[in-house]
Amino acid sequence: DIQMTQSPSSLSASMGDRVTITCQASQDIKNDLTWYQQKPGKAPKLLLYDASSLEPGVPSRFSGSGSGTHFTFTISSLQPEDIATYYCQQYNTVPLTFGGGTKVQIK
Amino acid sequence: QVQLVQSGAELKKPGASVKVSCKTSGYTFNIYGISWVRQAPGQGLDWMGWISPYNGNTNYAHKLQGRITMTTDTSTSTAYMELRSLRSDDTAVYYCARLRLPGSGYYSSYNYWGQGTLVTVSS
Image (tube, rainbow over all chains, first blue to last red; front, side, top):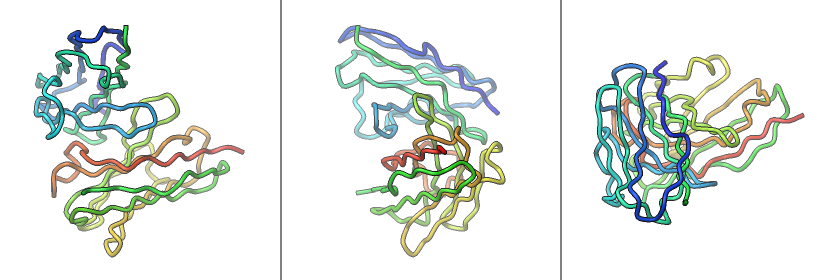
């Protein structure tokens, strides 16, 4: 199975800060990577697919980059509604696998 | 609009089975795969498998092989996930999710999710 190592597992930031999360795949997954946002008690929400493509309706402050084994997710200016847990997921190889999640909190 | 509506919470004893439904609407059911993902309390997301409503093809996570069955009813646009021989570590919220791309097999992200079904396994 492909292991997805996400870091950090949690972070605290101030409103307006730039937030960066990384996701490392244990083998080459090309750009078959997606990012989800999950708020407590809710289902995950798709933010980005194919590593860097923004899902329609998702604010442009969210962005992603990378290919192969190293990926980055960025919130350019943290907003109150961005407080959530973020997950990466690879869909290159079954079983599809998720990163462990990054909980974003307010400092 | 696309909707996936799941059945309600379940309380099961160890060794029992559970069958969760996922009724879809707002799109052509046959052409988008459905996956099931679960989340244990306070834990991350865990992919359980995929089914094609078009032909019934499935792909299950290895660790669930032999205990899981995914099916669909195209007449009601509903997907089902049955898990047997339940254990306490099967306690989780179970989500159905629709693939973003039609006809892509299981190599796609998920852009629509059900609201989740809590399955509790306890004696």
